[in-house]
Each structure stands twice: as C-alpha cells, then as structure tokens.
Length: 401
Picture 1 (cartoon, rainbow, N blue to C red):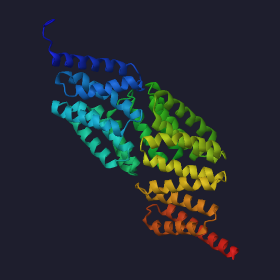
Picture 2 (cartoon, rainbow, N blue to C red; picture 1 turned 30 degrees about the vertical axis):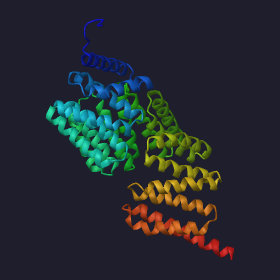
Picture 3 (cartoon, helix red, strand yellow; picture 1 turned 30 degrees about the horizontal axis):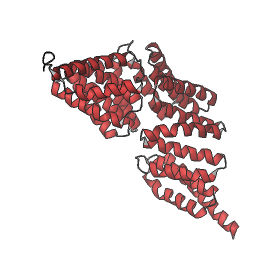
C-alpha cells in the first residue's frame, strides 16, 4: 500500500550531493588556510567523488576542488590527493572549463615538484599556462611563471628562473601579494649563488608583501629561508629566531611538510652551535613527517644529519645505520654531490668505528665517481679530503703492525 507520492530517488540524491558540496564549501572557506578536522575533510572528499559525475553541480564542485587543492597539499596529502585532481582535470576538460583545468594543473604541478617528479611538474605547469592563455587570465599566467621559476631554480637553472620571474613581474600589479612569490624565488636564486645580502633583501621584501596580505604560509617560508641564509652567514642566533618563527607559523596553519623542513634547518643550526642533542631532537621530530609523505630527498638529508649528530656525541654505533640509509636513499635520486656527501659521512663513521677496510672502500668509491661531478671547486675539495682520509687509514694500519 502506497503511503505517499512516488519519490524521484535520483533527483533527491543529486539534490543531497549538491547541498553537501555547498556545505563543504562553506566549511572550507571559513577555515582560513588550514584544512578542517578529519570528519569535515573526509566528507568533502567523499562528496567530490559523486559530485564530479553531476553536470548540474559543476559550478560548486569546481569551486570545492580549487578551494580544497592547496589545503590538501599544505596538509601533506600529496600522492593520495593526486587521483582526485586528475578526475577534476578530466571533468574540467569535458565541461570545457579552461580556468578550472588551468588551476588544477597548476596545483598538480606543485604536487609533482614536492614529490621530486620534475618532468611531471614541468608538463603540468606548461599545460596550466596554456589553459590560462586561452582563458585570457594574465595574472594566472604570472602565477604559473613564478612556479615554473621555482621549478627551474630547483633544477639548477638559475638563468631560466630569473627570466620567468622577470616575466611575472611585468604583469603583476604593485599591490598584488603574488609579487611576494616573485621576490621569494629571487631570494632563493641569490641564496643558491651565495649572494647573501641580496638573498636577505629579497626575502625581507617578500615577507613584507606577505604580511600585508596576511599570507601566513608564505610568511613562514620567508622566515624559514631567512633562517637558512643567516645560518650560512654564521649568524646562528638570528637563524634560530627566524626558524622558530617559521616552525610556529607552519604548526598554526597545519603545514607539516614545511614545518619538517624548518626543523631540519634548526637542527643544522644546533649542530653548528655545538648542541648535537638538540639537533637530534629536531631531526627525530622531522623524520616521521617525511617518511609518511614518502619524501625521499628529505628523509635522506635527515638520516645524513642524524649520522653527524650521533658522531659528534660519540655514538658511532647509532650513526652507522642512519648513514647507510642516507646513502641508499640518495642513490635513488638525481644529484651526485648529495650522494657522495652522504657516502663521506658513512666513511667517517666507519673510521670512528675503526673499520678501516670499510672506510677505505667507501672513500675509494667516492674517488671513482668524482669525475661525474660538474662543480669543479666542490670536486677538487672532496678529492683532497678523500686523499687525506686514505693517507690516515694507511698510517693507522702501519701503527697496528
């Protein structure tokens, strides 16, 4: 027996999904820069899987995707977020929505770069720029150029990075917070080239722009990089202050990955201040962050630095396994210098343990690979150190006879 009019179940379901998308949007847009709690995040993600199939909900769905994308990346959800980004890109293409496609490809490029997939990042940034060119959005193209500059700089292509930033600066208006990103990249280029005063000046300009825009994440990036420059300059107290401010900001906005990077740098400062136990605490706090994020580069750096801290504390047996892990991980990545630097740390650990045969094998392996290093100055210095180590091993063996 019927108890009421027939219900249109599919229509009701579509209405429910659309309302849920709108509710998720309100929740996200009211959460500031941080990702909401797990239940709200899971609801938004679950809703997206259905909403992407509803043509009538696309306007709200695309807004939800674009709002959620940077928050997911910031919170460290990278590989698992990529699949939904890909679905969003495909749906954007079917809808002919070049603006949303461009934004999602930009976010995917950022994810690829963080995951050290530089070819994938370059491809996505290029496709994003093309979408924004078609849609006629000059500012969005400038945003892409800034990210392409960041990628080029990461790959050691400083001249290309500088050209891309210059192109962005020609488009961006004086009051635009995106200018801060341009100066951030210029600071990083100067940092790479050891032009410390110029790096500080650019980071401070970027910081002022981000403070004016209340862009806390980018403020934290500036403090983190200022801490790095001050460390290189030997101004350890200033370095510590900047890094502690960065760590506090990253914690406040829910950015564990960059908080982890700042912890690594703070640990390095403590090493130079003769506080290896404090350094080890920083590395230990950062390690699970990057292991969970499957960030091989930062894991490798942490293990190498932990090895140094253990050696300075005389805990050579504990240094050995982390040094071995560092060498193995750097061996999976491009960049010969980092791999050989980690091998040198392993060799020093073998020396401290008086495992002279193992140490000799490591140092000789480094000498065999040195011709592949492009930086002539670094190559010469490392070669000289290896010969000193090997001579020392020879003397130690003679003394044992």
